[in-house]
Amino acid sequence: RLPDEIEYEMTPLETAVAVVLELLFQAGFVFLAAYLYGKHKPEKIFAMDVPDNKMSLDGEFKYPLFGCCKLPGMSFFTCFCEGIRWADTMRMLGMLTFGSAISLWLVANVVCILLTLGGLFNAILSTAVLAIMLSYYRQGMRDKFNMSQGTGTMALDCLSYAC
Image 1 (tube, one colour):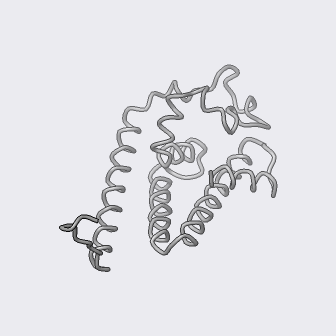
Image 2 (tube, rainbow, N blue to C red):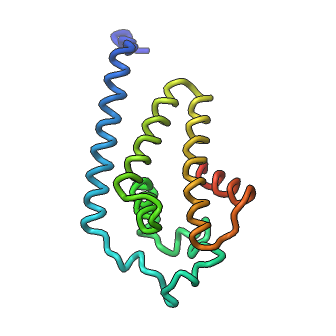
Image 3 (cartoon, one colour):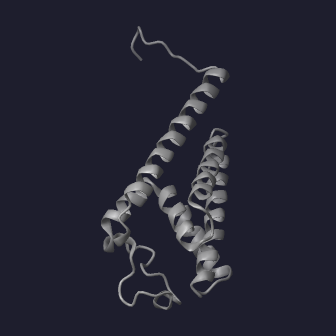
């Protein structure tokens, strides 16, 4: 430690203000990115290859779990704006509206952020809660496309989200 270095610890009030400002910044960024995504999303990126029908997806996902190289631009976008892509998927499937899905994503992330303030156990708990929520909706996606469902696929979905 340098001689003129002062150690500073935030008060609980300062911590609370910092967390609220961070959450507001995150929500503002997500809503701005979601707005721009909705306004400028090129539909052809998401169009299905021939045959262009639901039956072509029955039984398996179009892209495998680690098939990110097949659509690198989309994978890059999803890596940094996963809530927006998830919300759009829920919209396309008719499971949630885009606005309610992005709001659910933000609320879940806020809960996760707040839980992580409580230490390692809460961080693990928040990851598990988010993975279970996302797996629930993925099971709905599996149902819509007549894919296998059950304990095994639920565990696979949950573990893939936790990663």
